[in-house]
Length: 523
Image 1 (cartoon, rainbow, N blue to C red):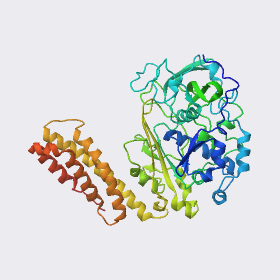
Image 2 (cartoon, rainbow, N blue to C red):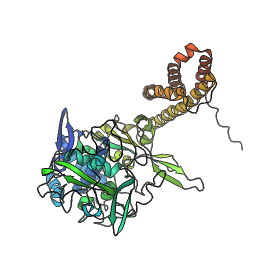
Image 3 (cartoon, rainbow, N blue to C red):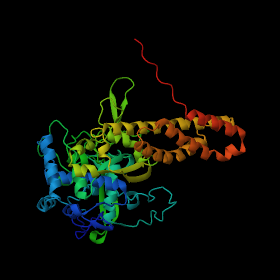
Image 4 (cartoon, helix red, strand yellow):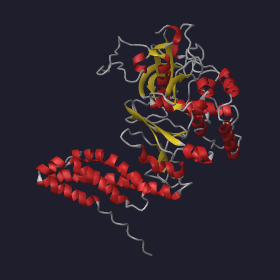
């Protein structure tokens, strides 16, 4: 068991630099207090890991609501919007309010009693630590083979505390499920955990011209029926850490944005606190059973995250619709989600845009006109595999929303549908062409995947052209892109084999065929 941290090991999440930021071409690291005091001079966060940036934005926005008073559930919608406009007009966060908030709470990462975002009881509730290699993504741990990493069981190199804090945020929000370091609570020992609340998700965050604008634009409005004063608390605002219960009420905005972690963590510092040498990583709920037995682990019941888009699935045996978050897909370009972002909520729709979009139309005109969307995605399976994280920035698009330009919004939706339908058609026709040319039946013929890989970049170019040409034929434009992609991937086969040339020609002809219109209902 690692020794207790030395009393001289300190690192303040509020006052020591650990958050990467960008101002013009200059990059620097700041603590949370400095982040808010100078948010009006900072262009954007610059964390190297998108899931850490997405997690930090939620924490920073919860703090924004606290220091501005936007967390008051008694405010009416008009009062809340007026207060946010006033905060934006001020141009910066009030220094006295920033200092008052950070002076009120504990931020020491290695405090023996209240370490920031950690549970000190893990020293006695766990028989052993998890190891620094299990904590740091990408390092081999346990029985995993070290194919591409110099780290191993006997080479557990410490990590800088600034980096460890960002990794800790990834575990809290995107952590894996299944087996973990066993933990004993109330005489019961178990070693399984649920997945993090954002696991395998893609987040959409409003992005202003400064971090000050970004944080204020990102504050979600209160949509609940009631909330008792003083019941909402972020983890660092609580007087003592407690084992979470999955049924605990998720309140706004503190617990909604910062209090739904399914993982308990405790960092072990190196000399002075500048590095982390070891870590405990285990479950944080009283009911993690069944996470590792399930073929696809059940996601914890959480309130709707305001930065995620959702799709609705109709249950087969009833008319009830189940809401599930859209999964991140590193191979899926952000523009393919544009119809979900610009269309207003529809109770009969299949998709719902992030709830934070419902408040953006009330922003001042100059900000709304320049507001972009930051996309943070983490392509993971539901259990333990981390595939790829990614990020993107959209152009200003709020003027395209259905509330402001319904014609443009419907054109975007039409183009997105057209691109997806043509992709499905291309997949089917390429498979049929391969089977015909080779006289075989392959479940995953190479032409299909290769054609799709070539198609989507072409489809993006077509998409933006169609938005600029509102009278252009959508199906024909995407069919041309699909035909070009199919010709490219089959060029060698068409030259060598007449059967391949004929099969591809038939497939291209069918790409341009319109599906028959549904029959009209007769009286």
